[in-house]
Length: 245
Image 1 (cartoon, rainbow, N blue to C red):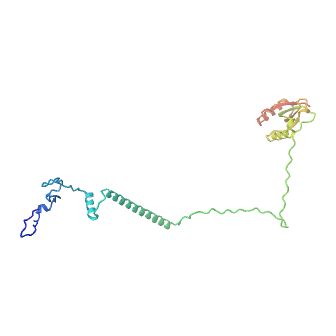
Image 2: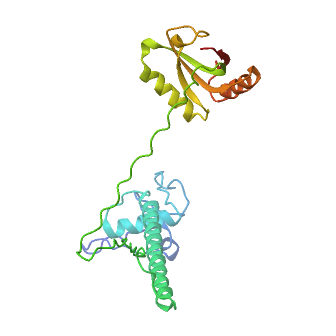
């Protein structure tokens, strides 16, 4: 830039810049034009500011021109991420809305209609048995059922000698009721002809016991076979024994 000397006390007039200088950047200190990528001013030696290039610097300069301040380059990635998230939300909402409309269309056009929310269970009807009534209107009294009598235990034939299977020898001190209970248990196990002998009344037995026996046999072999059966029914100590009055 050149300045003309003053004329008649008038302030010096600035001469217009040449077309070559008008298209270049000026030095901030001396105003000398310099090239775009020039590092130092050739007149005053000032280190010239380097103007960054690219999209982000241009956006930053535009931000400063509009608002007068600039938060930093980090604002652009943040705005881009926010924009992507907003677009994704809009797309998801549109997809859900389309899916709901399609489901409503399928339900409305189905020949079977919308399925019921719950299927009620079938009703159960119970038929109460009818009780015949008499002419007077009162119900008949059912007949009383008498329990069948408990079969008696096997008694040893009076005055007879023979063989039997001794299932257990129970001390008389335990009482006859205990011996009877053991005899009934032997019957429930499936043994036949179960009875009780008072050992004090027979010469071949030791006195002081209730002898729990099963069967009356004429030979040792028959009694021994029956003893094997008794052992298989749970009486492992069963053995054949002669009985003599």
